[in-house]
Image (cartoon, rainbow, N blue to C red; front, side, top):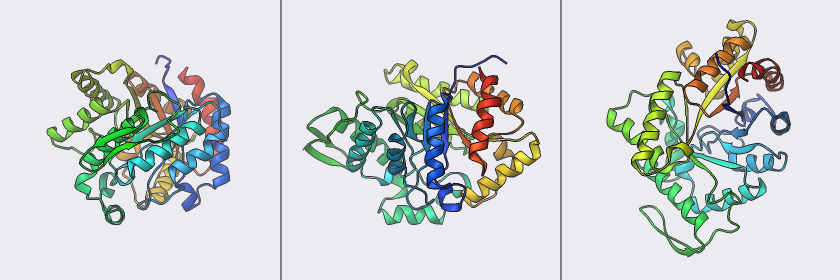
Length: 334
């Protein structure tokens, strides 16, 4: 299989601090290792406020901004986006972009969980605590993105929307990245067997509003189909689809014994999410086993159009996994 120019991101397990997979110090050190390696284009962290407790994402990225110099910094999927006041977030993310000297990438999503966990008890309680109706989450995400772009490009700024209304306000300092830090949308049009009209709204939203798209749990063929539809939607809205980026959230566990790799993956995911996943889901969500097999699967996604592979090492030994990935997998990717 041919080599690739696909970029790599490292997803740090900031939820792992809560259940013992890592410590705060180890997490920040992993960020430094990734930055020095020259292998990774970006570092991401996860996000939730109450439903899945973890080190808060923006604060964690601010700490990483002070300990890195090269990698982009982002949230793999800001599940709390509909719950956050976008005026406050504009100030927070603007400050982060200044601390990181323009190296941030914001990936918004509608939150509420995925698959069997979608709007389970914890997510219901989280949305209720913030006074947000689950039925409003997509609309709030769309309007929140519009608010961010308005506040980051106008000084003073005026906005009249369904949820937010303001005149003559300014968020300073403005972000370093111009005109705004990249704003992606994370969604999964291929996962839930949604009605065709729902799938169409999902891909249209990315094509209309976002600078990029992040997804997970897809086959290369499914990824390609959704990505083509998103770029078609962007062109339909008069946008240059060539400037959009795509990303895939990808679990990885390197082990010469494939079954042991699978068992370690299952253990990590069970501890991380509090539920068991079928082998089919685990297989769709990433790769486990010897380096050669894992590299082949990654290259298949590169050929399907993935620009940024967002790798989460589903292992309790993050340092060894990163080292082996750098030594044994990266050379196979080109």
